[in-house]
Image (cartoon, rainbow, N blue to C red; front, side, top):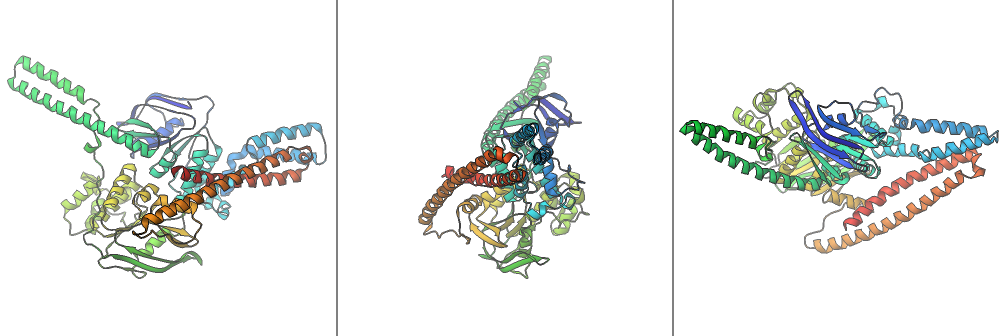
Length: 626
């Protein structure tokens, strides 16, 4: 056990976060920590690192273990480049390397036996602690989260807030503490970077606890799920999908217990009412005794979710559009002479659910903006467009929540507007809160409420789940699943994409390609397919035959690629062993230039090996599923 938590209780004033929670963190645990906003997830992290006191209970850490947490502002003010700042986690190795280089230089003019012995000790330690690969691992980590080679050379001061967060993420992962705590690590990452993080976490051989609203991410990496809810901690062995099944079973048990208890309470209350009507001393004592019985039954009674307030959302179109919804031809965008994408054409039919994916900065939001421009695209008959801006720039920060909706929908009465806002948990005086004072999640709820009231039949959504907690994401997902219109959505929420997408538009080589299917289909195609053509679904008549044929072909290609990967991995591992043996030989030991040359070759091979291992793992998962 790395960390043990027993009977932990924490509150802020009258606000109880959790009461008497108990759990342990074991080696190789990858724990997804979920729960609504304000349930205490980040506070729990702060307690585990020792940065936050607690009210009762205890936290025990194994002697000598290190706990690392993602720091959001640690590299502010740094004058180093992104690469140098990330490399700073290896200061010990850098000093060791400097000392080894100094010894090597001295040996060029001296054959001192003491120096040779010192060189052997330093080299053995340097190699054992990862000295041959720490530079390539640093560059690979930065590349994995989306830094190009030129961006790695930028100073930290030139980076955006999101890029600095990525640097801090890389520093934490490369420092490899015994327990890694990640608070929303995917927030600033695009899909490719999230997939890199998936693989890194699964192979890092460290205990990891992750606060995340990314359900697909939790499905891929977590082997345990912890949920903070109702001041309690619920745990489950397995990933997020497994936990959903267990949670539904628990909720059903809670619901039955609540209903049975309330029926019994109702029966006893009728007895109390009867005894009080008779109003004799004996009857009064009986009524008091029965009331105490009710109090004991209600004490600690868990209320089912159906009795709690949650956001209510439903999208419906007031007018049915024609079958041809949108046509666009040869859309192109360039900034400062540099093309984002060229010659993008698409044809959208009623009922399609198209998701646009791609790395940060490739032009996804720009493309969505072009689809809003009636001078660039042609809308079909009866099409009405609703737009969700991930930054909520179409909200007036100076207005109140109620004032914004009243100005947007002047024909709706105050009662109708208040009723709509109540569905999004804005009640009483909350409707008069200024938008500038709202959190990101609250602003997102206002924007979704506006969109719901518009009753459009074509929705263009830009990262609609960004500021929503897990429960709100699931509610939005259900609403979009039931929507009777057409959807075009930019998103990195792979769970949402997998559930809803009828086709994927993805950026590649400054153009946009289309694939029929969901996110899993996109992954499968990206791994196996070598064609650079648009993939289209077969017609209904040929569907079954072509599907079997395509699946068999894909499986053969995957097996071939998997075998080739294994062969390449074995060959490179052998090369690395040979190089390491040469580095330890007497004739190379005193040749500084030769040592440097062989070290560089070994580092390059280690980087190539890491890439092949990631490909091998992806192909292996695919073959297991088939």
